[in-house]
Length: 212
Ligand code: PRP
Image (tube, rainbow, N blue to C red):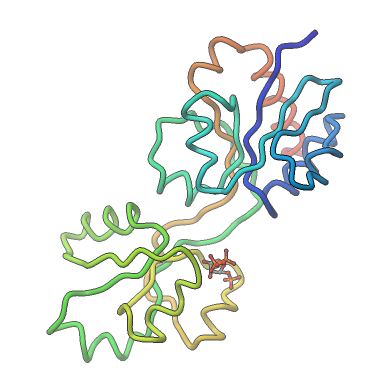
């Protein structure tokens, strides 16, 4: 019997795209595709255990070694700043991390107030503005970040832009691009040594699928 391999997946679109890849490798994803309220799901034949978690928790599970591998957006990975081994860029879930706001309004107000940045990514914001030597106030939000400049809570947002429709719908404009993001396969550093063959089998299989 193969050793158990545990995968932590971000619930939602990234998990669905990951299942598409895994199914092409004959891994049975029928249980995690329809989990109900269950959080631990199995492909018993391949001895693979899936855990479905919030995107921002994927790096935590993999870093602690309770998951051997995980799939998570590069944005979330950068924000978490954990020492994981980033194995593959899976290509899907592509988006950009951007600074957005009302460019004209900023020119009027920024000179006499602390520049306020609303974001779900406080660590990325701190390092981005820190590298530029700019002092900012970070206002941490957990969703609907675009509301920040709309309602006057912040001057700009640092957030992901995928289609751009949320920005457009709220009359906001991209002012700076921070970096690109897409889904990444990450691995626990210890698992890579102690379960080398199993981990490599999965990495090679996924790698072959994304190159097709
Ligand atoms: C994300 C992000 C933006 C939006 C960008 O939010 O924070 O709000 O998607 O996508 P778009 O460019 O295609 O419009 P999400 O849908 O995850 O919801 P949230 O605001 O509650 O975090």
